[in-house]
Length: 312
Image (cartoon, rainbow, N blue to C red; front, top):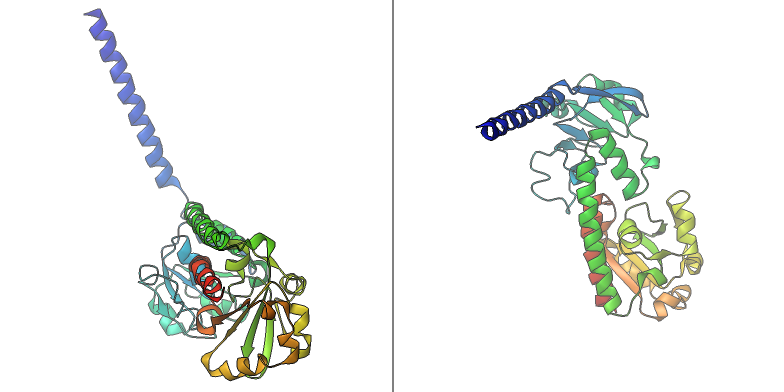
């Protein structure tokens, strides 16, 4: 009888502790502040602790990649072909270069993120507005850290990075199986627009993050200088030799195909190491020129790997 009584007392104590624990958790949930102060380019802004409806200029990929609900973005970022239907299910085109105020208001955002300092005052009338310094978010890792902190989505960031690293490892293995070790190969990125030639660093779209952060290619000396500087530069055909590397990636729109054909006949071009080795990889401008967010970068891993293997 005494043993039974002792067991009942112990069991009662266990239920009491469980109830206290549950009560503590419930209290924590209900007492968590609904807003927090976030230090942005436009000062200390009181933002929702867990924003539910986010309008974001330029960075819908970053927000969606970690689980944010994007309800609107600008016309340039909206066509992103790499975002899933689920990620875009509530997203509408809010216009460019600035958001259409009527459309923005209709989406009832509880947080607005912009890179346009001239529009902050108008946007703040609708919802708390965070001004982003895009120059500080030059890499995928930096942008992920920034938005995970702003949106309280560290778990979403960790989940994405786990998937990204897994996919990176898989694509690098494909390249190594073909005899290509990215960590021992240099790259340069060029783009043709009309009668102009541009060179890019790793932080200006054009697959730069997929090729470096993801696949692990090394940047040529000139590409490194651009990455650490302005991000891009217009170059002439005579200076292209400075961008020679083991692999050269060139993107252009179909309307500029004739320019690429002319470039292939240029004496400076024909003498470049990558050209002689058959290591010039052409990419579709419409797919790679602008989209450099985390999800786009993850999808571009296989896009670039397949293009390299096909050319090889």
